[in-house]
Length: 285
Image 1 (cartoon, rainbow, N blue to C red):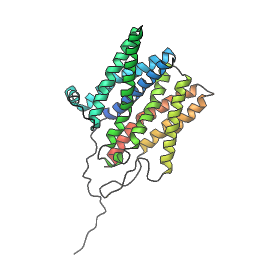
Image 2: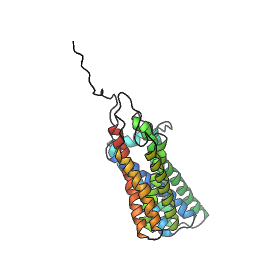
Image 3: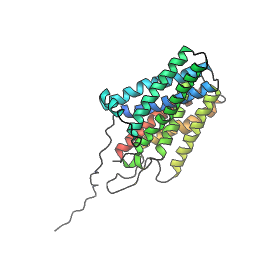
Image 4: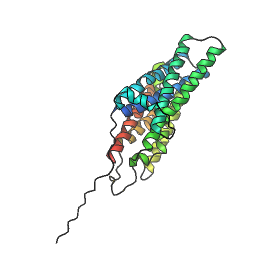
């Protein structure tokens, strides 16, 4: 009796993620808004130009409005988002994220309102500082917890990078936030330094992945896992927000319009990074 051999890979027991386009966009908007709140706090404390503070607050507030809308759009109806706030579970990235978003949005709205009222007196200034500090703290979590959320899943390529994803999301959000505040509020030296530092770190990360075998979006190869072929989108994202943005930043030291190109590259790379990792998770199941 003839024995037939098949090279077909058995079907994976894992199902690809069902997240729609709203989720990676939420990751991007929330991250940029969160780090913009940090920039607003730092700019206020250091006496930066009013245009910088206004732009940072504006970006943070816009993100505080849009982020819940994107999350609710993915969940299907507002009641599901409110249900997530019923109980706080620190062991659940979803629960931490929902509560962080609620705290961030509330603190951002309060800070913007107090800032518009131009409070005078120690009590008002203390209230504004407290709101800014709360928004900045929640913003840091908002910019990084999405990486934790991906890494905590059973999707192999995400789980394999669970330590790096929060850091990568946070750094790309910082570069995109500083760049967007620049485009809206003017090009200042401190913002350029922040954006250049973020681009330098992303460049180092991009080089590290390019030189290290098995890095990038590759995960462990198993019998039920797709062959290790790197997905291009995250690498392209790193190229945009890393080397491309850094080179343009350096050129911008002598030619100011190059900084606008660097800002655009950082923002595009940060957005593409989220969609790229989602696509990598689907391709690797």
